[in-house]
Image (cartoon, rainbow, N blue to C red; front, side, top):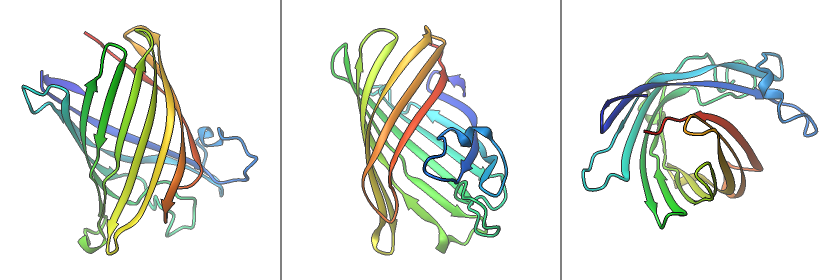
Length: 214
């Protein structure tokens, strides 16, 4: 992302997808071998432009981000080859609405709603789907470098039966700036507590984020 104006950022997004389908006792780190075998797949799955806007002068804690992602890999869902599922084999238009609300100098609330439009590759609009995940995060800022959070998310998929599928997940996470104001580590875990036609098990997540505070 590049700051074009104080209120507008423009950039691009690229998704790398890797999956390994194996036994329960296998290591959870097998997808990070980034291999292509009968039981594993790895590819660049999506690429596209994105923009982030702060639309209101009086409400600087509200922002909007939109991305249009084009599928790069072939047969991402494995429906033609029978290979492991990597991602939805569709165009994705994601629009995120963000709102953060400090409660005091230690506690903060963060809300996110993301209309997620999935567009058929052949532009058969009868096959398009829309999902509207909504999330809330409660963060505790322990120090200038360390914070903890709890999250709750509800993800419905809309269709002929109004809500064709959904899942709910909750979890906890921690963020720590390894290099102050430059490099941040984040890890979290979530549990899928309920669902219909999707959502099961739990997740373990971790990542590195390059940050730049003025």
